[in-house]
Amino acid sequence: MTKEKPMNELPLMGTQEGIVLFHPNIPKNAATAVSEVLSTRWIGQGPKVDEFERKFEERFTAPCKCLAVGSGTDALHLSYLLADLQPDDEVIAPVFTCTATNIPFLYMGVKIVFADVDQNLNIDVKHVEKLITEKTKAIVCVHYGGLPCDMDELWELGRKYNIAIIEDAAHAVGAKYKGEYIGSQSDFTMFSFQAIKHITTGDGGMLVVKNPELVEKAKRLRWFGIDRSKKQNGIWENDITEIGYKYQMTDISASIGIAALDEFDEHLAHRQNLYKIYCELLKDIEGIRVIGSEYTDREHAAWLLTAEVDNRERLMKHLRNHNIESAQVHYRNDRYSIFGGRVVGQFPKMDAIEERYIVLPLHAKVTVEDVYYIAHVLKKGW
Image 1 (cartoon, rainbow, N blue to C red):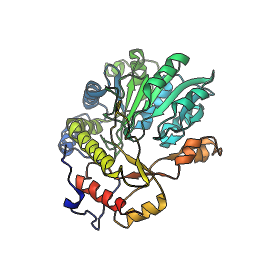
Image 2: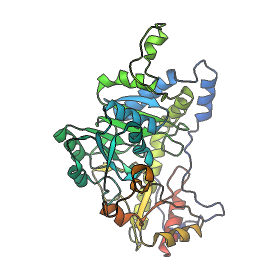
Image 3: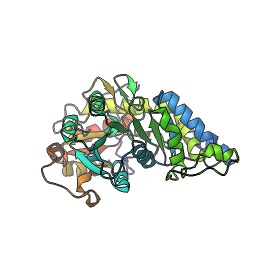
Image 4: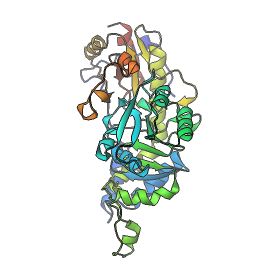
């Protein structure tokens, strides 16, 4: 962990280029890994995909099984299919998330029942229980920014009402809840390897399945409904009985993912160190609260540094004037027409924080000095 320095000992980092909000984390061996794959006969789904799945499972999700796919959205759609969600079934999902969490339900004719947020923009478990009906078949939670949700309460709801718990862990590779990795306990979990996530494969995702009896079905759904192992054995008369999709990962992508796993511990430690320094430097600045900093029973994966602030527009302008990018990144889904539009007053906690959250730079290229500079700019007031 980098030793912290007094602010007055650090250079100010406000260069003309500035401090950008996101930057891809490309592993140093990525180009070599891709080049090696390009010299083989496997550039689509092949042995590197198998290797990536195995290594990711050993590192994060065991005993749950991993299937690498083309995107996090692919993994979510597959998890919803494997949970046997049918048209007109109800699923409780967070009102605040990337739209990718909820759009697959529109493919399927599943009714989305939005739940409010808690004070840290994760799903409000108390509101979730109030929304459960006889039609509820699953609860989807999102570990916003890398902060695990209140999983004990969600798992208890799953047991009590016999409904599936599905984790959207797009932000949460490496996060832990009560000492256990996110992805190792729920019915289904999705991880994202999109361009700016902790691990990137250019684009990609991982579906994690708890029930081993569903793994072969998941593999068929990932590849047009075809049993690839039988096909590769030269048996062509196999029937296709399930509607499948083209959701596989390629060996090119998997090779980058494997290289990223080799560097993951160092990268996660860097992000978590920056998050810790942000928390320390911002805690006494009036008008700003770092979201998710108060927990001791869970380990933040530090994908986003989100803060609740006063006068957000003025603050963003103040940061821009000092060459620092900021944004909201995700938005409440009930504002989008595809989800039916907003009902005023339905989500009071979301209403209260909607104009107050902001995301600050936190990624592989951000340095300790950058965080001190950002804190210095904020300390001046806005």
